[in-house]
Amino acid sequence: MTRTGWLIRPPEPIPYDEANAAMHEVAERRLAGEVPDTLILIEHPPVYTAGRRWKPEHIVWTEDRIRAAGAELRFIDRGGSLTFHGPGQLVGYPILDFGSKPDALGYVRRLEEVVIRAAADVGVALERSDVQTGVWSGDRKVCAIGVRLMRARVTLHGFALNCTTDLSWYDAIVPCGLPDEGVASLSQLAGREIRVADVLLPVLRQFERVFDLELAPAPEGAFAVVPAVTP
Amino acid sequence: MTSVKMPQLGETVVEGTILKWLKKEGERVELDEPLLEISTDKVDTEVPSSVAGVLAKILVREGQTVKVGTDLAEIEAGDGARAARGSEPPSAAAPAASATTLPDRGKRSRMLSPLVRKLAAENAVDLSLVIGTGTGGRITKTDVLSYVASRGDAAPGAVPVPAAVAGGEEAVPVTHIRKAIAEHMTRSLQVSARAWNAVEVDMENVARLRERTKDAFRAREGFNLTYMPFVSRAVIEALLAFPMVNAELRGEEIVLRRYVNLSIAVSYEDGLIVPVVKNADTMSLIGLARAVNDVAVRARAKQLKPDEVHGGTFTITNPGPFGSLISVPIINQPQSAILAFDSVEKRPVVIDDAIAIRHMVYLSMSWDHRVIDGAIASQFLSLVKQNLETWDFAEDLGL
Image 1 (spheres, rainbow over the protein chains, first blue to last red):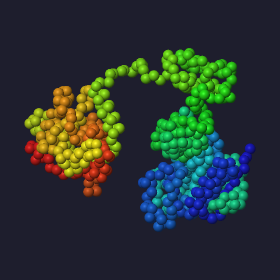
Image 2: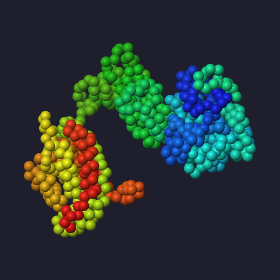
Image 3: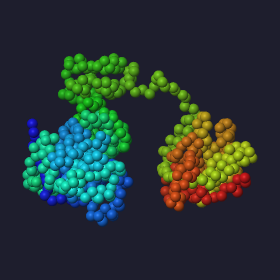
Image 4: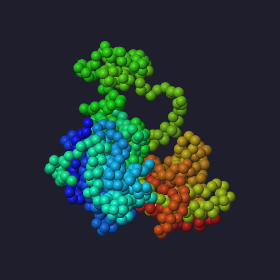
């Protein structure tokens, strides 16, 4: 039986700290059973985030140079190493309660499936890597995935899909700590512009299918930090 | 005790890495409170405690990767505890519980395991008096053992008596020297406020000199030239400069010495003995080499006179030949400090922003904080280091 959940889709890019706080708040409330499974679809102003497996050599630029370029650097609590979020990238934070038997890797594979199907919907063929998490085109990563399970049951963080992202932002880091792999965007692969707005509905629909959820906009004012607005 | 296991985080997940313990040993943890974080691939997971209690023991360190189901920690269940699924029942607080908690005895007898029957028979336990804490009031091994322990008797075969030697074990008598070492060391830790620090010393000049002269030295003196006299010489000079390190706390007074009686820790077949090189501050490098060799040889031959193991003012121990990298020795009371020098080995070091290969050693010192403070200890070690790195010992050797 399809369950129902909430969708949070702010109309404007939300600074990382604000979104991160909101995500954690939603997860706490999901853990307490106050809210249903929720998908946050969002964009961020330029920010580099370092997950728990970051190493100094994964940050190529100095912090000063990163700030001078107009980006922030944040050290956060998800799995994985370094990644970038910024304009032209669709970021998804699913807040799902997996109950007492979480299938962490199965969850990551399902996130990949959502992105592969959504990309196919806009005419771009993507694939999994045998060894690395994420969604790829050859040896270039188009969608990064990093997840945390709160109390071993509620998901935090999620995926970041490059649509029209300026890929030179990735020069500042070794994405995900993988020096030999590159990055790509849907627009670059398709040879035409595929904007965040173009993949938003495909991602939403495929997410609903893969996770067997029906998402409705969260009630207005349900979250203090992130305004709840429909796409 | 409830054991915390590496959780199964998916059908294909066979192992996980401990990222961080969020609680320390001895710290209280509530039911469902995050206890640690583990990492599998790109997923970090907070693992909540399945029971309220005290984190008794952490079994797997941060950074280690272990298989699903591995025991990660033990929690001593406390008030309001709820035993975790599949975990050991909390050990029974024994038979004082109120009558209402007594399970149905008729049913219980049918659920005894062979092990419980055997334990009960061996310890002459009337099982009707034992409160079961297992599923459905089942009596477990722990229940029987707790009952026996609470009964306070010594029924035949009753549990922990530190007695007979079991198969695979061998009992050796505690020799008088072992006993003396045990008492001396324990007493030192009881009376002193031990602190510790270390320096790394570039021994390249000493190593080269020793390499160049060792054959001639052996031919002339009849024994091997070790690092010991060099370190001793450098230490003695530093002791004269920092008499507080060469002092003894005697009642209400700290007695400083303007001389050095150097104790040298010597290991031999029976254990450890610490002969003293008296008036070591008056000796040249060669004199020290001969004196140190002399007491070491006679210690191993058990030919030391009683007064040759007393009256030391500072001790040097040298575990280096046995492969040790760095040591935390126990102060030889009533002295105030002991210095250990360990393996001299080639290491890459930065010199003038270039990387060089040098003979390096860690000199470490345990010191009594009742007498010495960190600043003095550090300055003392720095001076020893400086002496070893800058002195020209070649002239002293006369070779």
